[in-house]
Every structure is written in structure tokens, then in C-alpha cells.
Image (cartoon, rainbow, N blue to C red; front, side, top):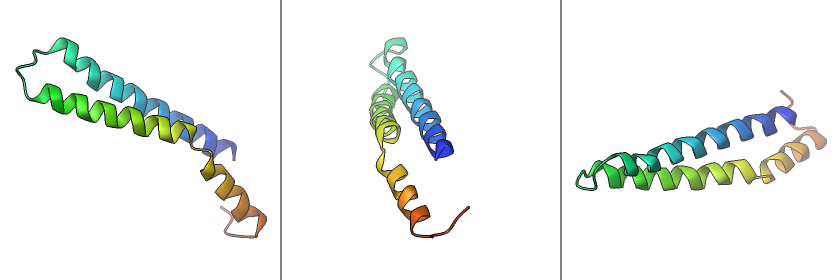
Length: 74
């Protein structure tokens, strides 16, 4: 269970940081570039997904139920 929490935390933080980096491109580039708006869109999506991955606790509960019922053990 600890490994699931650790991997969820790492991937959530990486997605949030990548989203923040893509949004920060807006401040470095001129708005005339079309790629700026694409980077903003992807950045917002990555931040939302990163927050979802970071705070999603239902996956841990699913793992506990599987091990309690005698499901596959890795």
C-alpha cells in the first residue's frame, strides 16, 4: 500500500510541475504565437489530472478490498 501512495504522489507532483511549466511558457512567449494557447490548454489539463491523481484515495481502497478477498497478490 505504501508503494501505491508513493507512486501516486510522484506522478501527481510531476504532472503538476509539468503543467506549471507549460503555463509559464505564456509569460516567456508573445501571444502572437499559436503554440502559446496550446501550451496553456495542455498545462491546465495536466494540473487538473495531477491534482486528481494526487488526491484520489479510492484506488487504495480498491487494493485493500482485493487483498482482503483473496484476489491476485503481487
